[in-house]
Length: 316
Image 1 (cartoon, rainbow, N blue to C red):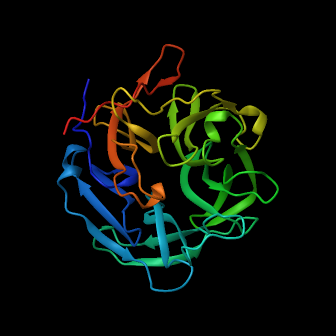
Image 2 (image 1 turned 180 degrees about the vertical axis):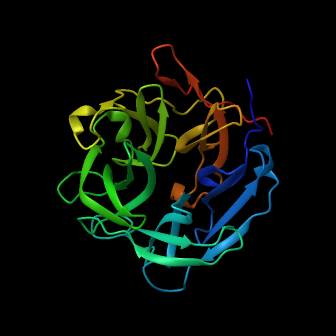
Image 3 (image 1 turned 120 degrees about the vertical axis):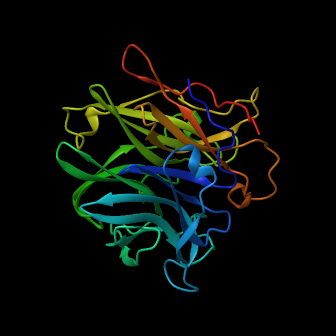
């Protein structure tokens, strides 16, 4: 069973790895929250040593000028897109929350590291509230947008929403809420469902997500649905009552989460996530830079459910 050096890449949170036409691409939040940077390599291991290329820097003012969070790189209809969240201020709003909204960049050139990136603006949703952590995927012949957002009439920081897309920067129809923080482990420090990621296996579509505050309480939950079922009907979704990946005090791995998925060349599913190796954080955990990117193989149980296991200890 393959294992990778741990940490895999230091001081990169909310990690996202895309495999496209023989290359792996890596993008993540940087501690300064001020830029979007890509790496590319012919292998997963090669990403550790690959040069990082800054493809976009935040402006000094405006809606995308502060706290650039959780970018993802996607290749859609022959063009490249980066989805990310940003805000106009580091100040909190009257509810004590950050003021992020979701944005998209587009690159029509073949090489996203050298191509020109164009700002496509904010991804508009039905309500103008804290929103972040968007991802996209194809399912049942349609392109979907999946994200986390604050709902005015629901307690807590963020819930998970799904909506069909008109194009890579425009939603189509009405979003449906798939999950909100309800279990104790989703409501520690903050009431949070965020960072969704999609994984298909067998006859099911899975959505992993992260819950609670970004300290050692941060953990991963799991939703799933039959591949043939209508994803816009909330009753078709199932939700695990316990976290599927959580802090390991024994292995000194704290707050694992904000994951994505990729595959090895052999087709094995890989969990890409961040975690810290200590709990002593000064001030707001978001400003502690040591959420490191880590990789772990996903095991599959006989009943078709994923087994993420326990976050492995540092090897470096």
